[in-house]
Image (cartoon, rainbow, N blue to C red):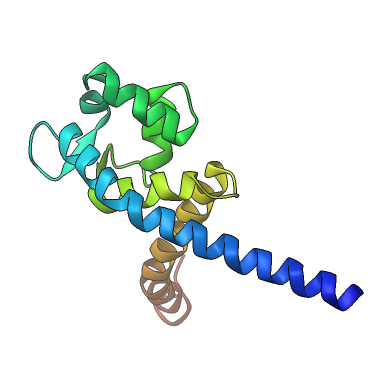
Length: 141
């Protein structure tokens, strides 16, 4: 009986994942079109001003999809790296992530953590060099 319940629960999870994947796949073209509508400058990036100046129906759609009332919050959720702009991949990925079971803020924290680790990876060799120079170089005060 317990095994049957566990099997059913597992099958439910697999079905839910399949449903979510299909829904996301169907949503991607719509999100890309939404991004193109927001990108009034045609530079392949959207900034906060473009979102704030979007037609009312577009703004309402974004607020509804993401589940946040403030457009500034929506933008900052999508602009996890703080660059001031969002490209189409950040936009689509961020909106899709906001539809998941995990809170959107968790996604932002994870992305920021990855960006920090990436930057630290680039700093390590130069930091190592300066430490080695300090240890092996001139010892005068």
